[in-house]
Length: 246
Image 1: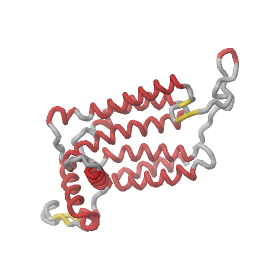
Image 2: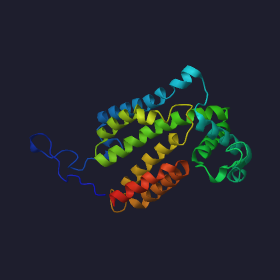
Image 3: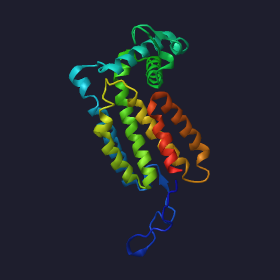
Image 4: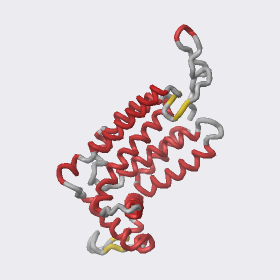
């Protein structure tokens, strides 16, 4: 994957632009304070939209988990929190797949359960008493906002302009294709996996920016991909895209 950027940029009247003269850049673009403030404000709006629109079900029906798979995921998370990882990884559930039962530890992608359990333990360690049900209900909305930030980073990196990143984040925050899989209460694998796959693509492309970028961003991309594999069977999409771009 090769990103081609112009080496010389000109402003009005043919004069070299600030970017061409070595203007410092931040993660929000060229170091123009007014532009940065606007971009940060718009990105905050995108994150708020992503969070607020996903809470519609909670506002209307309360903090309940809905659909079939989310209920199983919640039950598996309860078992993980109550019994720990060792028992969870060897858990044989006799109440599902009747009459055979199910070896849960070897037939699921445990990323979402581990994520919710860590969030539950962390929040309660900080002194906030939150039920596991509430944590699982809000996980999709939280990761919807994080995914919006990830899209900003990815679009900014591949396009070379943070303006494209902001526009992409605003669109993605209310994108129906993602929204339908990340509504609060829809505690399913895709709600965290989409965030992981976008972050994996960002870290991967970021590792290719310069010959030495991979030293930091290469291992981070690998860790993000490992997390994505643990969360969803759609990890093959990343492999397929990697094969296309080689």
